[in-house]
Length: 212
Image 1 (tube, rainbow, N blue to C red):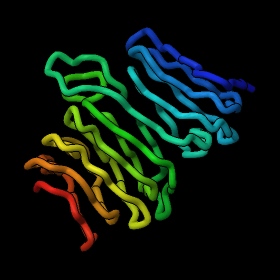
Image 2: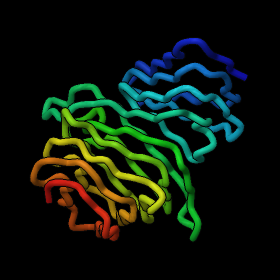
Image 3: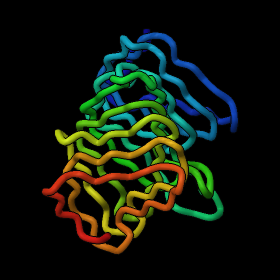
């Protein structure tokens, strides 16, 4: 069991293409910060830490929402750069069954991950998000559904930043269903769907976002 509180646990996976696994229980009220260029996997469904999770660099991968504990916010930080400036990626690998995984956790995303054409968030499976999702006001935000359907539930909200391509989908074969109310934005291409391999659908008649 890893117990931390009163500050931040910085987990640095410094070697690109390497993977580190935290299989034991993570508990406490501190914040978890992921840095470096490798991948950190959280695998314990009994994790119950309550601080924030921030992915500054590298990749955080989970296959069960419970492995993320009960964070107040999960943030993935990055920038849009053709030079592939450092950024973070969150990968959620759920099941392809009819129910998949569901969470009410709040998320904030920005950037392209650690590569020039990477993603700040990747959903694999039939996963539903019922919390508040916000995207950056300082950079484009790339999100992908690789398989199954990524659903933003009508119990949640998608808050767009005020830069172009703020919800930018370029890759993946999984569909994206946005039932959540979409708000804010401010520029053209606020939601930019440039992927011929999937379908992106907005269903909420109460959307108020600015931009197309």
